[in-house]
Structures are given as C-alpha cells and as structure tokens.
Length: 584
Image (cartoon, rainbow, N blue to C red; front, side, top):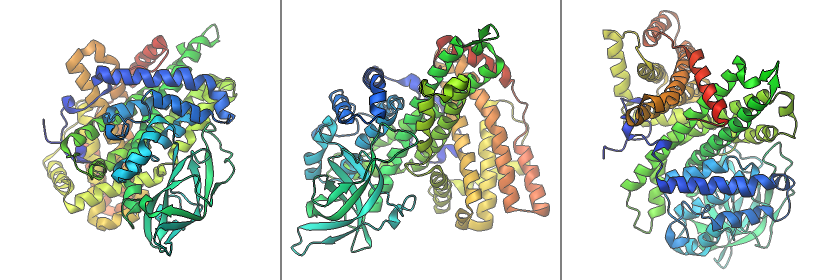
C-alpha cells in the first residue's frame, strides 16, 4: 500500500484515483449497513415524524432502543464493550442515512458521537465497562454538555467549576450548560468544568445525581424532534473515578471529539440533501404548468442538476475522507490500554479535512433545501410538504459542532501552522509554484488541469500572506475565511474529479458519464469562484506595482476555455428526473 497521505497534502501533487475511496467501493457489508440504516429511518422514523415534532413522551428513547437492536448505536465502540468496531465507512453510512431523520438525527448523533466517543477514546476500562454497553443498546441515553450561556465558540471560557470534597471522594460541580442535545431524557452527561477554576476537565455525570436539573425545552426553529435544554448543576457530587481522562486535559477530549462530530455532521448533511432531491424531483415530475411537468422547464432542470451536482461533490469528499480515516486506523496499534487515545490522535491528522467536509456539506445542504422549496413553489412554504421541515431543520447545521466561521479558521490555521512547522511541504510547494510561473504556465487543457490551477491559486495567495504576515496572517479573519473557501472548493473539485476518473477507468465512459458531467460542471463553476477569491485576497495583501504583478500571475494560472455546462446540466437533470432521486 502507498504511504498514507498527511492531512492537507492533497494540495501538493497528484493523487491516484484508484487510491481514493468512493461510494462505488462499498463492500457487501457496507451495502447491508446502508439498507439497515435507511430502512430503519424510512420505516420507523419518518412515519412518526409528527409525533417526534410534537415531542411525544418516550418516543425518542423507544426509537433509540430500536436503533440499538439493529446495531446502529455501536459502530465506533469496541466489541469488548458491547459495540461492533466497524470501519469508518460504515459509520459514515449510518450518519448519512440518519440525515433524513429530522430531529432524531440529532438524538442519534448525540448518542453515537459527542455523547459516546469521549468515553470510547478517553475513558478508563472501568468507565467503558460500566457505561458503553448500555449506550450501545440504547438503554442509557447520553449527552454532551460543553456549551454555556457565555461560552459557545470559545468553549474553554466556560465558568462551570469543580472543587474536590474534603474527604477526597467527590468533585462538587456548579454551573450551567446551554443548548444540550438529549438533555430532556439523558441518563448521563459528559460535562466539562474547571477544577480550582483553571484546570479544564471532563467528567461523566449521572443524570440522577442530586443537584442536577434541566430547564424547559428550547423553542427552536427546526430539529423540533430532538430535546434541547439547559443543564443546571448545583453542588452536584461526582465520584473522583468519573473524571474523564486527565485533570486539566478536558480540551484534548473536546477538540478531538469535535473532529469526528464535524465529519459525521457532513454525512448527515449529504443524506439530508439526497432526501430533498428525491422530494423535489418527484414533485417536479408530478407538478404540471402550461400543460407539461415543470421538470421539463430549463430553469427547473438547472436547479435539479445543480442540487445533484453539489451533493455529489459533498458525498465524494465525505467518503474520500472516510477512506483516509480508515487507512489511518489500519496503521495504528490499537491493542494497548490507551487505544482510544491513539485512535483520537490518528483522527486528528485529518482535522482539516473534517472541517472542510463540515463547512462544505452543510452549506450545500442550505443551498439544496432552499432550491427544494423554490421548486415546490408556494406549497414548499406550507407544512403540508416535507421540504418545509427540511428547510427549517437544516439551518442549525452551520452553527453546531463549531460554527462554519470557526471551522474556516481551523482550515486555514491548520494549513499555515503545519506548513510553517514543516509538517507539510507548504513552503516547498510555494517556491515550486514561483519557479513554474517564472518559466511560464500555458493554458489549462482540461478539468484535471483546472484542479491544479485551483491549487496553484491557493498557493499563490498563501505565499503572499505568509511572506507579509507569517503566522500573523491568522489574525486577518477576512483573508483567513477566503483562503479556507479556496481550500475547500479545491478539495471538492479534486474529490469529484478523482471519483469520476476512477469510475471511468473501472466501468467505462457510459457508466461514468453522469459523474464526469457533474465533476466538470462543478470544476467549471468553482474555478471562477476561486479566481475571484484569490483576487480579493491579493488585493488585501498588496497594492500598486506589487499587486499588478500578482494579478498578472493569477491570470496566467487561470487560463482556460470553459466547457458547455448548460448542456451537461441538462443531461444530469434528465437522469435525476428519470430516477426521481439523487443519481451518481
């Protein structure tokens, strides 16, 4: 097997399409997981969605038990603790299928992600034995209590504190946590508090502890089927054996858990997009105006094609990253008592990719839901049609697991810091680009070369920023955000193109045609966006003759003849309408 690429190194060279994992590589086991998870959502969740939205007492717990019986709560848990120790592709599949489950997707995510993984990765053997089997079966519901009224994105600024009892047997916790998913019916919480007001530490807190209470349910715009409450801690005694990991190392837990949380959220978003495409394509086929289905009108075709294309790119990114995470797991020694921490450290290598997935997929989701409502017209604005709920539900995805603004800073800061430390060959790539510019770069001949153009424009922008500010570039958030967008779009362009090229080599042009069209449509669209972003960044970093020279270089990097994306979109839309669902 070729050497495992480091996080962020997609920027520095060519990737072999055969080395990238795609949904076309699903094994029979993966397909079985997909059928099981999708069947559960379609058969058990969607028929009771109105009851979930009305917060019918006990329904979420009942559904979690059903999910536990099907093995949908333990994909990331070792078999020793009642789980199934599945690969990250299986985990991704479950997350994707849950994406159409409305508020229950949050209930499930709280149970299997941020509420479970702190124990999986950082718990002691005794803690895992005590809590994980019940979480995997659904008999115990868990929640993650990090956010506070005054500490959202700046989570480490939390005020909840803990002091050791005089007899040394307990920590006594006081504070308030806000916007806590599953809080209304959780049996245990992963709570973060500062010991002696400064040592940020994780605790496993049982819900029946004296002094622990919850506020009323939040009245939310969407995901109404999930429970979201304030958690109040008033002199809550937590046994010292329920300290999670090490005192003062709570930030290690929080940040590592967020990596997987962001990745799984991107999977949710992809599944949500596929559901909206299915609803919209069926509606467009059935709805007639001017004596023909609206699916036959050019502007509706364009919407369906673009919804499908952007979802294809997000899906390609998610499963490419899942493949990298799986490969990483195979390189690690997970046999020791600290195997969870080893796994979390391995996942951290792809923190940049996890953040790119989260931002891109959730923003595609917002676009797809908006266009879905538009295709439904006035009916899309009524609760009679499911697309109205999907539109409301999707908005929060850009806020939790780190806002998209925070994740944009993660993307750029990870690239810059790893590059300046020499962990990735950023400085060498920038120097190589400058040498190529000096010797001359001709017009780009195809979409594969446009992917390289995107990388080059990003490297040009990063090079100028680092030359001017060094690591201080990270203080200029407007520039940081634009560089993150360039990186994200470039990763999306390449992921979609590699998937299409792999399909072309493996199954031939006829079978790969829709994938090739979607990759080309996205690349031709995104390259212009990246060019404009780079122009803004350069204008923010330079002026006068220096800027004029940089803009001339930028123009050299982005010479190409655009493809006929209008014709390609028509072909994509025809396939979507014929199938009445997402196609790839």
